[in-house]
Amino acid sequence: MKRKKWSEEEEETLINKYSELQSSGTLTKLKTREKKFQPIADHVNSLHHLVDPSTFPFRWSWRDVSIKVQNMRHQYMGVKQKIRVSDDDFNWADGDDHWPNFFKYKQGRGREEEGGEFGVVGLGREVLELGRVLGRRRERERGREEEELEREERWRERESEREERWAVRERRRECVEMEWEERERVRARRETERRVRVEREFDEGRRRWMMKMEEKREEEEMAWRERMMELQVEHEKQMMQMHVDASQSQMQVLGVLARIVCQFFGAGNDGLGGGLGGLPPQVLQNLQHPGSLVGDNGKPDGNSDTHFM
Image 1 (cartoon, rainbow, N blue to C red):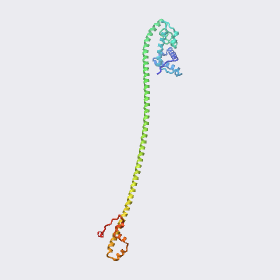
Image 2 (cartoon, helix red, strand yellow):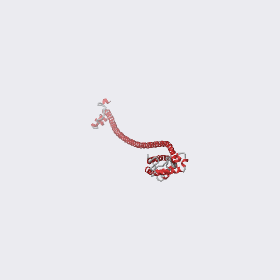
Image 3 (tube, helix red, strand yellow):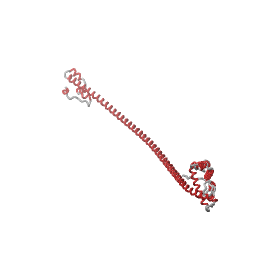
Image 4 (cartoon, rainbow, N blue to C red):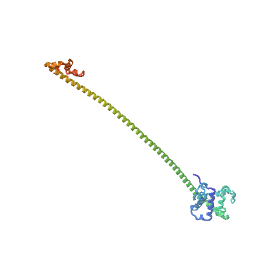
């Protein structure tokens, strides 16, 4: 975090405003540090930060002004020690070399006799002694104030550290959330791709199954048609065989009748025998052996007439 630093112009404005309020007696009427230093902070900010924030980037609070006033007191005393020639003699001309606003601060404090405090004027050696006593008292008070300021500074530093740690945690949390969101997007994309792939594989499997079933149905239909054709051919063969068997049976019956007629009329009736005798010998032979009328597949009943009778 960038450390706050007062510019020379802001420091001069603070000195002038503080000296003005001190001279008018306004500061002595105010009981709290916030009421004393908030008007000074507003005045400094209105002339610098609010006018040109790029040149004067810091907006000062009343705590900042209070700390700055204390620091300027120490800074003034430190410069005095550096330019001291003897106990009561100082090389004032060298003051600006150590602090550019040294004379402005010295003028705001009033004429030096070791105890002046922004407008308090020394009154000789007695006042000097009193100033020394008061100085020691103020040193003790300043020590307590410095301790308080140090505590406040440490508290601010701890607050700054806590804020920095909080900011780091927030950045980490944001990074974790962004990483989690990215993982969720990747997971959702992969899930979508997987679902599309499964659906595509399912459709492909169903298409192959339907093609296989269609091929099986066509094969079964072809097999059924071939079986029907075989059955039809077999049926036609059976019908032809039945027709042949019927024809043979009819020829056998005719043969039997012819034999009966030949035996019945052949010996006892010369007239009928004469009529049959006029038939060609082959016909008479066939009439006597009817099995020859049905061809080689015929089944004669016997070789003798007595067996038939």
